[in-house]
Length: 461
Image (cartoon, rainbow, N blue to C red; front, side, top):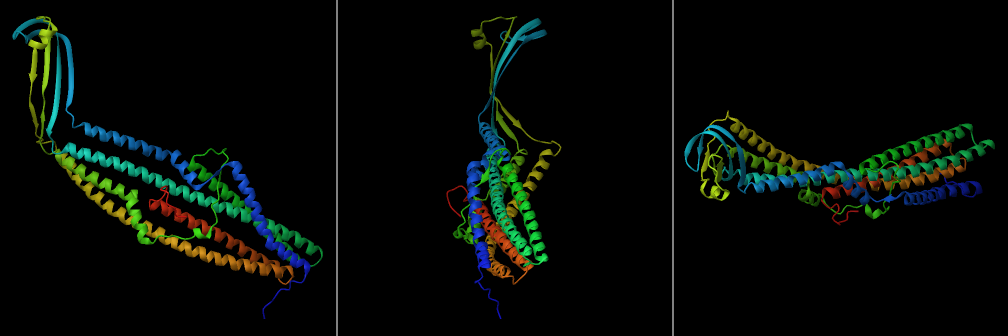
């Protein structure tokens, strides 16, 4: 036989209706107060938080500086193709035997003179060192670009996680405040019933104990929210005295859907993942460095033209005659052969080749790690969809159970322990529902970063 509570008694019915309406009114009031507060305090959307984090993060600023340095290195490598040109001027005094170039005579005395020289050097062959160095520097540019993108993605993911955690904290605090107010009403009602000898002392104590527990949970929820707000502030580099609150996202059930399958997620992630590009850059740089080290074992050939002139107080002439008659021009080729240098170059080649092999392994590892990360993230999203659906069902039945037990308690047909147990289950179901919702939305937004859709105008809500 199933118990059916009667609704003919005026006072219990009024109390039941109050229990139904009060949470809704309280939630509307809290949200209205909260929204008014965030307007005064400057409400931040998720995109605003991400933009601010990217602009103010010092690690990202350092990565941007590295991009500038790598471009300078690349330009310097390009300049290596231009012949070197150097000028030198000497002026001094010589004692003893001295050759006067203009007279081709040896003189013995005190000579005061100067010499001016202009030298150039053009490398004709050096084992493809310059082309490979230029390619290596180009890869270095791409590497720093991809490092910057990876840092930006890491910061974006951290901001997303912290933002949704704060949203969950806010909803938890609102629900905790509602619960405390409900418990306060029940304690006041229980005191009246106890004074009328319609309620046992144990039930009153149980209600008072539940109120103390709810107040304790409210303090913990507020402390957690402030702590998570602080973490988000630090990520955004916002001063502590700056009024700052996050803007709640719209609670739309249509958001709880993910439009991509696993193959699409992996395909898009592979195209955009900076981790794979970084590994590929490192592998190509290691390969080019091995070629550069092998070039050190080959001969180098350079062309070295020069022109110079000298003057002496022993044979003074005008500047015009000096440049015309007292001039030396030389054209030459310089061949350098690396015969023996304590096996330094040979060991450098061995190390470079081992480094190249390791970089190839790192590239394969990065590819597998990315596939694992995307696969895990995708299955977390699918699990989140299921968890959200289960949380909705749990909340529905927990609410029905609480209404049922509330009616029985109002009619005096159960005790405070049973009532509080039903209320605790409802509170837990509400928290589970909020946690499942924000966890799912957070994981979808993180996947958006992995897939390269973040900030490109494409929406994965």
